[in-house]
Length: 309
Image (cartoon, rainbow, N blue to C red; front, side, top):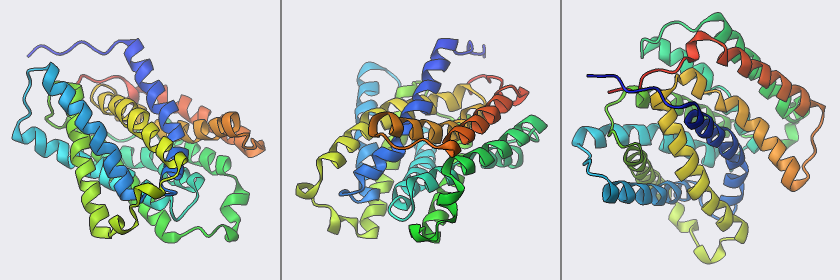
């Protein structure tokens, strides 16, 4: 079978821009959304509605029909990325600060490198990648700020930290699985199926957790509703679709760099739109993260790969 041509540079740039910039704003959006909407149900309805729109559009405009193996694989991906990964972040943000959640999510590239080597036969991480990962983690610590990390009065929950950590592991493994799994050729159909499956699992998890008892639409604040709509349209339909496509056409080590960039974007968007302070830790941490990103992206490990057949 003839190999597919590599994706265009402009497509890659636009996709990375969506993943870097839009996802950098979702930590704040999730925080607003879960103020009055239970986290698992919010995430489930968010992804379920976005997935239904994309799936319906793909089926109406294309001839491809998903097979049983397609549904099996997209359900596995939806469980790992959305139920465990995103559901973990949304749940944990009830227990820990969003900055702390961003710090823990920074572990994603480390899990990427480890799982890619141990389970997906991608080879041992090179020296530049290892140094870049370590440097990026240090940069996130500086970005959050030692004062925040050492402040025992913030009520940081060990359970919240554990939930985000498990979510990062699930997200990393699911992303690597998605990069090689047998999926529909139509990318929009694939993304819709992943979000439908993950959304239903999140709603089921929220039901088991008893979140419907706290689900009162009349009590939803305007901020929560606006944040929810933003998460559906931009966080799910735009950014998640871009991420799913990138995991099929680009090296996972490059795609995983969003975990370094998102916190930087989040901090600066907060400064731009909400006049949140930007101190020396923000500037120094951002510089370290950019240096780490440069190391990783200059490594041979991030060369664009062929999309799976």
